[in-house]
Amino acid sequence: MSESVYKVIELVGTSPTSWEDAAKNAVETASKSLKDLRVAEVTTMDMKVEGGKVTAFRARVNLSFKYAT
Image 1 (spheres, rainbow, N blue to C red):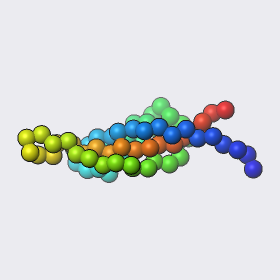
Image 2 (tube, helix red, strand yellow):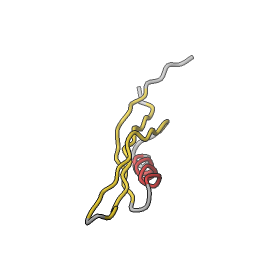
Image 3 (cartoon, helix red, strand yellow):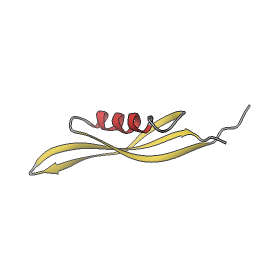
Image 4 (tube, rainbow, N blue to C red):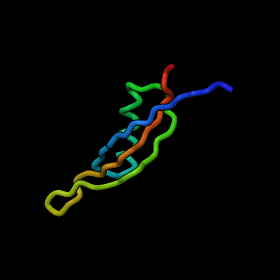
């Protein structure tokens, strides 16, 4: 069995519509420059509030990818 090493980074995605879209935006944006993405874990969800109204959903995502050796 070959051994692999993975790196984990933390990202924050945003969306005006939902936490799901915020997490998806983080992963899809990262995929433009990172290869071999493996697992995305949403660790925190929050909202930006302005004037008593929710203006953005934010999702903090831990994303792992295979580390080139």
